[in-house]
Image (cartoon, rainbow, N blue to C red):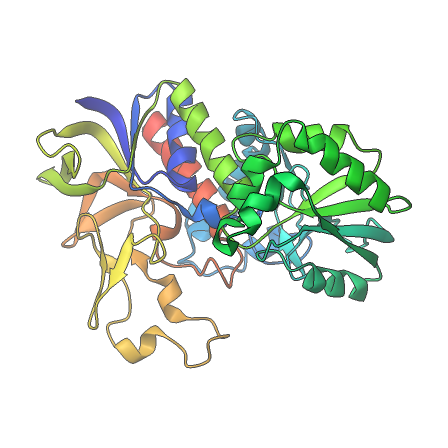
Length: 409
């Protein structure tokens, strides 16, 4: 079976690249092993950790960073179109051009954010809190959202917080088993007529408040339930991230996948690439676990398998390696230099990843593969956690590589 491009990895990077290529008329296949880092999504995409204006911060990044390799001008050009790109998948994002705002973590801490899902609680770049008094609601028995921590953080910022526990009969079945009281199961229960009861409870409890903050447990497949609740309320309702699994993250993945498929893309879910067919310095095709006798061929390939978390990069006691094709990897050979004893320090291993040239083409045994690109967290040269750029690198390198493939540069 022949495609224009094959993307290995169906998370944020792979879906962004696939949508971009399909929208440019390129026939794409995405091979996805399953769960992605989007299931741990905070509700906000981060470009870099600099508070306020991030343009100057981009210019100070080391040359190894993917943004530096694209160039500041190219990075900003791609970033300027991301809101419209996601809107094409019916995902509305808010955020200022070239300037970070702040998201509110479940601990009540303000962290710089580039773009935030519509309806998520956020604070402007000047850190001026948009409310004086809020109702902080939680679902009775839900252990993955600690409202006491959230309220303590907000009160330090000068916001008066009123606690409230939601008790709805439809959730009683989940409460009989604490392991069932998870965000995804709650989201399945909070739908239809249940939203009327929820709106009634919150309206009474939130009287006199500037806003109601809820754990993000509404709308697993689309934002309809969240929008329906808001339409029933006279008080603004905003959502705050919970511990995983992330309802908005799963929803984002499903909506991106649906858009990719609506454009004609092919998505293989629950399959793993286990072999590549190489000719010289090119990859001609791949084989997968579930289609052992079939070779999927393409003109170009994108590796979007993620880093250690997604097992795109793996480590033994003596080496770090790429898990699909055995590609060249940038890492320090001396194991004691892989990590810092202080867990709160920047960990060197977080910057390990696939080696690429200035076009994000990978290499194997020292030879550049002319039609195989890498994008996202599988790349070397950056620390997505400490630099606050994981999602930004995933999105922008995916767009950059897709443009290179579509336009031949």
